[in-house]
Image (tube, rainbow over all chains, first blue to last red; front, side):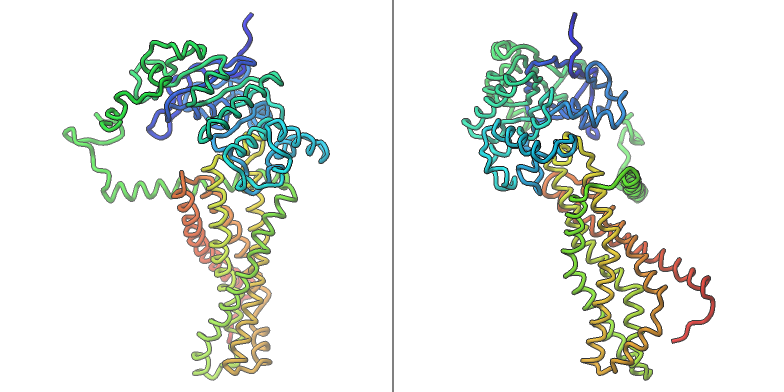
Length: 265
Length: 283
């Protein structure tokens, strides 16, 4: 018997004005897998993650959580069920006006009845888990480096013990060592608890290290009218060995004739 | 045939005719008004189900109320002095210079105190709020709030709206009081008006209705400033340009709405006064 997917898309499209970013996308995310979504900038990877988390509405089609469409849920149900998900934003999206401690504690204060001692304990554990010293708790986000911000963002995403963690370009803008630290953290989170991970990235090293399954999105503007927007599904090894020239070009990271194409567009 | 445009002979219809410009401006105006109405309804709905947390509310009240005190006091003081300067010559030609307190202070509490204090606050508080919320929007902090189970309207807009709604009338009282003192100082110390006469005419002409009508207007101004600022912040466009535009738009739209509210309420309150207390007014 097959398990009901944690999240699925049924013919989901999303437009911004006249620009179509997602077109009839159908996909399934299974419990405890690490799905990595790759694709060039603007192909709808981050948008699809926001749709999965219900931070955005699809223009058509439906998003399902545990087999049940989101549109069948009330606003309160969505708010409550969204807490099963943790989200590491691309720029970390830490609240500027709050300290690191208050950022990590935010979800706990907002959604649990924990007392101050429990909150302190929980925040200290999460901060330690992402490899930050306790002294960072009193700092404001503006005082942190890019890598520290991402780790605080991850600590905040993990505070409510989510079943699914979304990582939106978690290594963008980081040096190679810090990139690997984040990759390690993704693996560590997965090894320490039963968690489903969805990672959007351009970083092929991340794909290689963390992916159970890889999806590659292609920009709608470059697709044929009836073509599927997900041009590749498979393991990381299969992605690296793909014969599809579009996948091979992305994996190899070569411009080819793209510059001429862009100049002519 | 091209979709969405009328075409003649295969040529797309021009989109920059006065008809199109008026039409698009009308659509934008209706969209903007509708957006404000929806935000107001969301805030009202959340207020009915409970107040925001005390710490969030107190933080906003401190930033909006306490931190605005100096600028509001300075504004009020100068309004009072400028009114004294402007009224003195006219009143002196009529031999009424001792009555300057009535002119300065009635204008102050009914009209200039509330309007100029609100204008000052639309700049200081409203623009800051729009820029703050706009930055939160472009840096995905508003989405982060939703991801952490918080409702952005409840967490961000309700405390700001309540703080403006409750504190802008109090700040107007400060502007009025400092303005009265400014007018008194300039009239008596510089223009040589008798101090006792200044206050005697002030208190014989200012009625409780004048003071309350000024404060009543300021409640509306406060609500409008917060509403416009939150709306602009939540709808902020991308990047630094979007944040800058949100802050500027917040001030400009708030100012226009303050003048509109002032005109409508001023007319209504004057009519109401004559209904409640019919009879001639003498100076």
